[in-house]
Amino acid sequence: MKLKINTFMLLSSFIVFLTACRPSKANKQSASTRPRQQVDVVTIAEQSVSLVDVLPARAVASKVAEVRPQVTGIILKRHFVEGSRIEAGQPLYQIDDVIYQANVASAQAKLAQTNANLVTAKAELKRYKTLIKDKSVSQQSVDQAQAQFDALNAELAMDKAALHKANIELTYTQVLAPISGIISKSNITEGALVSAGQSDALASITQLDPIYFDIKQASSEINKLQQRIAAGELQSVENRAKITLGNSSYKGKLLFNEVSVNPNTDTVTIRAEFENKDKRLLPGMFARIELTQAGVYIVFWFHKKRCSLTVKVSRVFMWLTMIILLKLELLKLAVQLGKIG
Image (cartoon, rainbow, N blue to C red; front, top):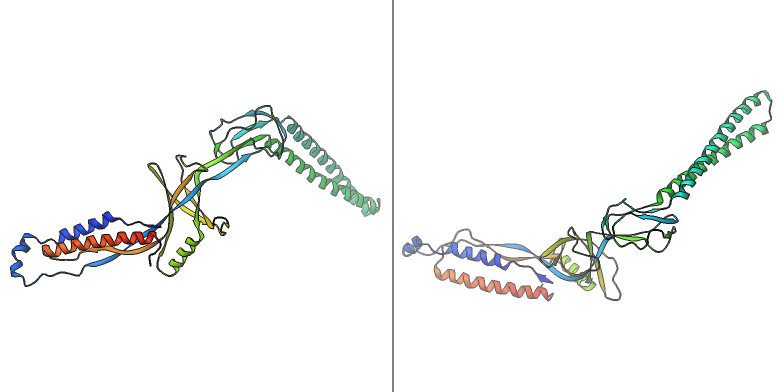
């Protein structure tokens, strides 16, 4: 774990401080008339400093979809360019749909037939209910007409479901992209036979923006960090992640921690999300992530209210500045070794 301290800002603040405190010509001329130098109290403020771990991570695509057929048939046409960007819902393959069009027509005919029979059954039931009042027909005939009418209603519902299924299967003959992303090479050619539920994918689509990185952190380090935050040695901060690739850096956010420890490596997986608009971060890529999980307050900033110092006193402050800078460097090393506090 390393401590990020802006040494340049610290040194600059001391230079400004010492410059402002340098005695002017007027002060030098009137020094003999003053009984003694007057110095106001210098206020020291606290600055929050982030504690950063550099941890190994592996890139994982945010979404991966394998394209498979949902009906059986011959591939008539491929509609995409291999390796291109695909939008969700875009047609990818066309399966021969002749049989499925016939199935839709058959289901429509069956539905029409049931509707016609239902009209007849409804009229017959109505007539029997009129005749039963004059006892012109038996109650058994009325019951049979009612049963016939109910059966046809049930058959009508089944026919509607069959037509709906036939229409769905017809739409499945056009294989659509389930997600947006970059499509792989096609694993099937035009003229090949595919079947519903086959194990081999026709192609795969990978979404690269955003992209995830799975970070491995030792469970002992996580426990130590939580204990030190609970004890007040460290402060909770907004968790951040950063990755540098060449001249480009990417800032991300932590999504979650796994709730179990890998028994083989004694590590916990932490997932971070990064924007990847330029598509330079690819799945499977190894990287080292700068992970910020806590912070610490360090006293190092000086604010001058008002002071009038001699040159000798200014030199003392200069030496004091060098000593504090040295102590801060030692503090960095202590934090890296996990010995702070």
